[in-house]
Length: 182
Image (cartoon, rainbow, N blue to C red; front, top):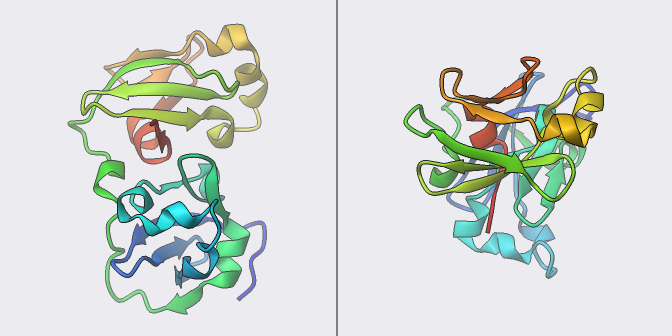
C-alpha cells in the first residue's frame, strides 16, 4: 500500500517491544518499528520507555510526535510500516497521554512560539498545543492575529479553551494531541 495525501492516522498505541501500532482512515492497521531510526542523537531519546510513552498525534493525523520536536510524518509511517490484522483493540498510549473527564484545564496562556498555547491541568501536567496544526483553513488567519490569539480562555462549562467568537478546542484534544512541557 502506498500513502496518499488523503490518508491520515486515526489512532495509535504503543507496543511493549517499542513498536507503534497505527490505525489509518483507510481501514488499515500497521505496525511501525522505530528502532532502525534511533541510532542518532536526535531520535535516540525514544529508546527511553518513559519518554517514548509521551507520544502524541499531530493535528489532522499528520504524524506521531514527541516533545522537543521529534516526529515521524504520516507518509513515512504509512510506507515504512507493516500491515497487520485488526484482531484486537489498539494497545494503550502512554498513561500520561490518555485524557479522561476527571482531567480539567486550569489555565491557558499563549506560548512564546506564535501558534501554540500552554495549558495547565489539574493532574499537574502542562501541555504545549499547536493551534495551527489543528485549525481549519477558515481559522488560521484569526489565530495569526496575536491580539485575537491572546483572548483564549478556559471554559469549564464546555471543558475547552475558547475564544470570544466561539472558536474552541476541546479538552480531550488539548490533552492527547499536545506535547508535555518539560
